[in-house]
Image 1 (cartoon, rainbow, N blue to C red):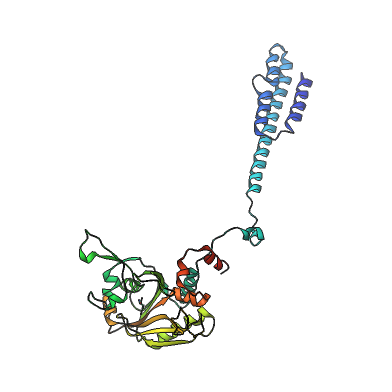
Image 2 (cartoon, protein in one colour):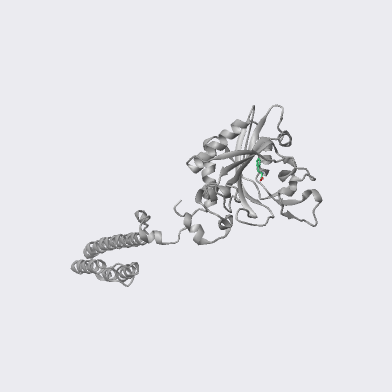
Length: 353
Ligand code: PHE
């Protein structure tokens, strides 16, 4: 009997060794250790054996059973580990492949040129201590016009052809519109903080205009506002010059002209020498050689009042940078309509930026 048990154990080990599937191992376990297996047979046959035999063979059989069970468990664990390792190997990402030809061949996304420039401008202002604020596209008349010193009958409303939402059920004063400029962010920004403060607010703006090489119905501005005590035009010029030299990484020629905006007094237009034609005249600069880029000025006292700020104590400057024009000057794009044409051949040119 003892020899038979030893023999069984040897055969069991031989059969177990080559198995690599969990189900095969479980079948072998059932075959040997199950109720109808050879070990059970041996134990059953002990009823006719002597006391002495029962003791030695019984305990030997139980020891073998435990050992077999142990071997089965070790085998099963090994198989589980091998399965996990295999899966990990299959899903492995080789990060050193990032720049290899096969990865570059795939069509990966990239930032839109307007976003590239917007992020750069944000970084420049953040480094000068400005906050970056967000605003909503849908606004009311108060934030888009009234608080900015443009009352209902003011001719300046015509300068900004507005997309109105006509709510047939709503009262007149609840009329909503698509913001025509990011100056709405000035109004929200002022009412939410106490001077001194400085922030920028980038975003899309909307105007019901005919499109041409330098006009779109949807375009991007980046508003800026700084409020404190004794702020002067020279402070404004300093910030604008810093911005432009950082963006273009070279000296650009600028000129300051008087400009009219009801929310600044005095108001200016900061133009840069057209970088598309070098000042000779082209469709982007409308043949004048200069491009309007940065309308700006000293914040009108009425605007400060509307924002809950005492104009006797505080003053400040504001500007509205035209992001699309900046993009066009930087990359030499001669038609603003390319920016929103959704033509992937255009967009994919900026993948490396
Ligand atoms: N909001 C003005 C526009 O869209 C630009 C501007 C902003 C002018 C801030 C002066 C100060 O035309």
